[in-house]
Every structure is written in structure tokens, then in C-alpha cells.
Image (cartoon, rainbow, N blue to C red; front, side, top):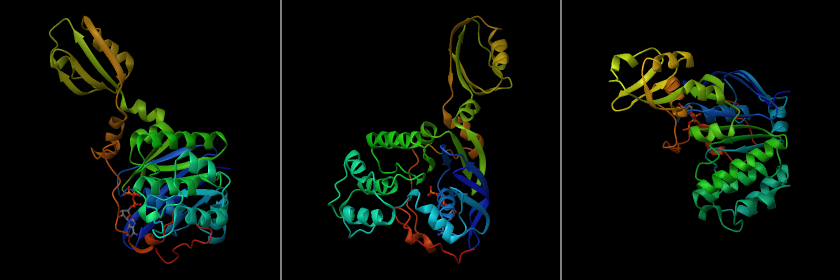
Length: 326
Ligand SMILES: Nc1ncnc2c1ncn2[C@@H]1O[C@H](COP(=O)(O)OP(=O)(O)OP(=O)(O)O)[C@@H](O)[C@H]1O
């Protein structure tokens, strides 16, 4: 049984498209990444899967439960850890009171270990915590009941690099213990480091689902070569060579067959040669027409509409789906 099976899932907010015709499967024990720029539909997909939003059409199962059926969705959420992209934590409560409440709903076997691991001071009022510390509270809430499936929306936003590493280690441990993960990010490196496969969301649609390995190979190789002869530009303007630069050395991104590259270079006396993986970003140019998700792009808070205000740091067992929206 797959951890998630999503079939033509579509969610419109009135006339505004959230996601359209999104289909994918997350296998048991897999880490699947949603990658896409702001507004691509990552949060909408996750919240519809969780049953917090009712789909306009299509369906999904989570851990075998029908995500569109409120009773089944509630049952599934007991075995799910959810980290919202924008945890609407109650500012007046202490972290301890919030985690106590979440623990009462779903359990808290790993709470103490996680609090220690992330160096969280539970006694402080959530309103007094920095963004990173709030994110830690949300992380502990999502992981502390040792869920079978984790849905993590921009999980490392606000965390410093050391804590990002700690988070990545935690995800890997949980997957080794049998959990499955769906995480969203617009940080390519994060997705590449953690995920087995990536679903690229663009304007509400899944533009592609690929293994990280395939994505890398799609990016091609970066070639830098110095030749003894005068390197005429025309000689390198061949199919497969992109971003060509000709100077003392010639550099280009090679997306063709290796044999063709060797044939090309064989016409020269090669003095120096470097062939390395092209940055993963290049693979994404093909999906985004230059609007590439990357480390420089930060999460921007949204002004919530409709049901967004009800978001919590973990799925409350009694959370209601919005029901009414189309
Ligand atoms: N409550 C809402 N009411 C109306 N439109 C919405 C609402 N929530 C999201 N949208 C719209 O749905 C589309 C997808 O937004 P969504 O938040 O799912 O994208 P995202 O990929 O998660 O973006 P981000 O990285 O900014 O979180 C956007 O056009 C957005 O404006």
C-alpha cells in the first residue's frame, strides 16, 4: 500500500486555481519532494491531502484512508505528522502548553528527546519566540508521536544551517524506521539532499515527477576545455552545447550524448579538460522558463484568505475540513 496516492486532485478557491489535476504516488518508505516557487500550489496540495480543504475534484488516499472522507481523514491524521508552512501558533500559550495539547491528541513518545535535540525552551511564551524557535515547536509537534507519514511544508524555513542539518538527520532516521515523507520546498538543494523523487509544481500543475538522479542528469555536464589550436566559436556551436563561452578556455553545458562530446573534442589537441555535473538549477530552467527555485528565494508570508487562519502546527484530531469551498 502506498503512503500517499493522489488522483487528479484539483482545488479551486472560488475562481482561483490552487492545484489542478495533480496525480502522484508516494511509496511506503519514500521521501517525496514538492518543489515549486511561491504560489505553485504546494501548500494547497498538502492541505487538501490532509482533509483541511475539500477538493474541487479528484481524490487521494493517505495510509490507505480516503482523504476526502472526513471520518477516514481524521483517522489517518492520528498516524500523520504535519508541519504547516506557516504555523498559526497561539502566541499567548507557552510552548509547553501547546505541546501538552498536541500530545493529548496524538501521543508524544519522542517529545523529550526532540526538545533536547533541538534545544527548545518549552517554558517560553510562543509570542516571545524567534521565528526559528517557533519552527522548532512546530517540528517537535509534527514528529513527537512517531508518525508513519510526515507532511512537511517548507520544514526548514527559519532554521539556521546547523538545525537544518539536524532536521535532515531526523528525517533520515525516521525513514530508516519505516516512515514515509512528503515535503515541500523551494530550496532545490534541500529537496535534492533529502528526497528520492521530486514532483515539480508549476502554476498548480505537476510539470514533472522525476528521481533526483534523473534531474541531475537532465542538467547535463559543465565542460571547460583549453585547446592548443585557435578555438573558433563555430566549431563548438553544435547540438548539445549550451551556454557557450569562448575565450582562453572554452566552456559550455553539455546535454548531448558523451560520444558526441568526445567526437567534438577529438578535433582539437586538448591541453586541459574539466567535466563536472552542471548545477541542479540548470535542470529546472526547462520547467520554469527562468523562474528557478533556488537558495536565494525565501518563503514569503501570505495574507490568508478563507480557511487559512485555522492552520495549526500539527493536525488536531478534531480539525474540520472547510467543506464549503469549491
Ligand atoms: N485561501 C486562499 N484563497 C484564495 N486563493 C488562495 C488561497 N490559498 C492559496 N491561494 C492561491 O492558490 C495558489 C497556490 O497557492 P499555495 O499557497 O498553495 O502555493 P505554494 O506553492 O504553497 O506557495 P508558497 O511557497 O508561497 O507557500 C496561489 O495562486 C494562491 O494565491
